[in-house]
Image (cartoon, rainbow, N blue to C red; front, side):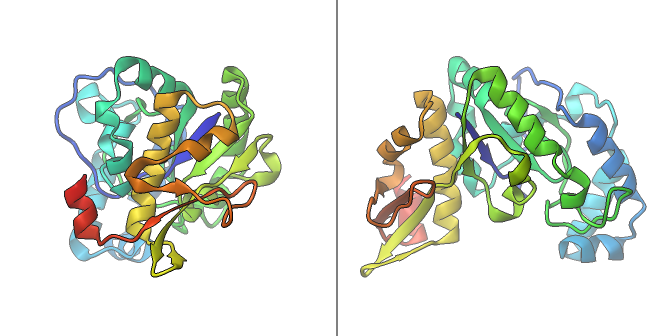
Amino acid sequence: MLVVISPAKRLDWSECDVEASVPAFQQDAARLVRTARNLTLGDLRKLMDLSPDLARLNRDRFKVFQDEPDADLTRPAALAFAGDTYLGLEAGTLDAEEMAWAQDHLRILSGLYGLLRPLDAIQPYRLEMGSRLKTRRGKSLYQYWGDQLSKTLNAHAEQVGARVLVNCASQEYFGAVAPKALKLQIITPVFMEDKDGMPTIVSFFAKRARGAMARFIVQNRLQDAASLRDFDSGGYAFDAALSEPDRPVFLRPYVTASASMAAS
């Protein structure tokens, strides 16, 4: 079983003594950065709907980006990203054996790096998969990556004997995985809150739950789709009535965001 998650806009660049690996698409990242360097501040703001300050920050990041970076400029991807999904994943608390398993079975989809393993070294960046960055391959990052990510996932799955891909990524990022080129069964878990008998997806909670599901898969070394039903982190429980074969639904009583954060 492989599992994919999205990256995060928010980064954590605190010190880390974990040995990092080299991303498979490091050269592609460097090419995309060279393209992004040609954009004006106005172009960057429009490309990713950024504030002036964020546009300047990301312009400066592209300027100092190194094709073959020094170790002190990078951080392992699963420890560098710090958004809601990564609050659920809690990669920093995985032990060495769990992280080694994750390195073989967990992948992070990235607009800049394509596909990352948890320990792949990344430099600070922001380049969302939905960005319409024009390159020689097309008018968007979806066109740039084409079927490369699907083929790479196929190869990784073959290496570890996986036949199932659990999609814990957002629609924006999983849209970069070309389904016709993918040889794996796709399972997409859905996380819902029960609001007075009305099951509802709440983005904040769903993102965090997707990270928690990835952690559950890693810690339990899951191999088959049926075992996903045992997921119960954060009070979620499998709901057979709402589920479909490739779309298992997990439901819990609705709680406010502040209550959820306090409980964690």
